[in-house]
Image (cartoon, rainbow, N blue to C red; front, side):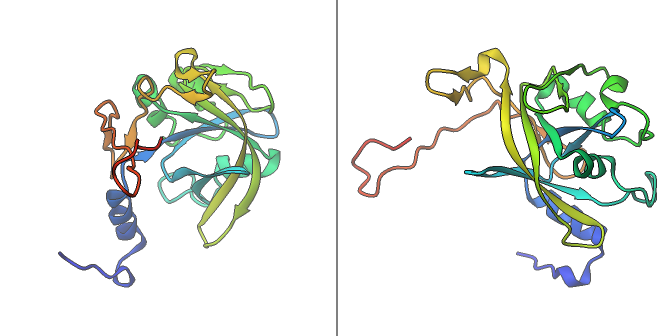
Length: 215
């Protein structure tokens, strides 16, 4: 094993090692609205759920654009969520992957990324921010808290208040996702992604290993 000390690395070197190690990561295509009603869509893979009660998720976001993308400007997603207090996390599967990735390019702030890449917007039920109609699952969220823990980075904590599911994905009797039909794409390091169609079912056995595995 090769040991690497992070104190000797640049920020960009840390980024590549961390994101190359943690994977596959879920991808959230986040829609948000500016105060003038303009819709922004941006993909995030520094994203995951945190708890059920309250129903919280987290998104790691840069505070400002870098030297290659509107340097010094506060990021649209963060600014919009702070101003409106609402956003939607749209899950990404293979049919929308390329369009979701294209939403992350350096569009000017006045451009609606969803329109630009050919994704349709649909109204949400409990919040004013639209969702992506083609997304297999979409979570309506309200801002819970923003943690500004570093000079150029923040964590958005959102409370999930409603969910949309493609009709074949939700078992309404059991109130569970039909995971065998849901195939989200995962993010690896760099421009590398993976499918989730190859599955392993590994139940947790009871301690004595003789009983029925618990769900």
